[in-house]
Image (cartoon, rainbow, N blue to C red):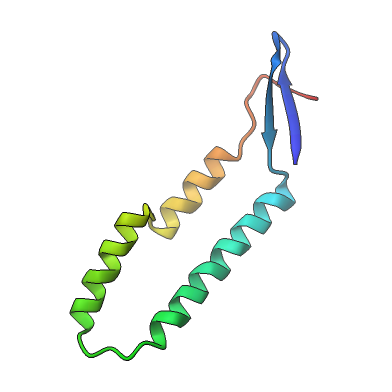
Length: 87
């Protein structure tokens, strides 16, 4: 974790993951996706189209986004503000 503050407003503090923290979150997300894929592969599938539709509904209800989009958003959100000063 890294802490930053604004030079013109000491009340505001940003807490940002360090590079190691971002790497850890990325690895955990990859492990999560692999675990879900393994679980789905182990299911007996009699109706592949039905399962795909159910999974799509589940993913949308859970608010999941495609991995590439998640990665782009994650990298963008992990950037500290330009006017941040180490706290």
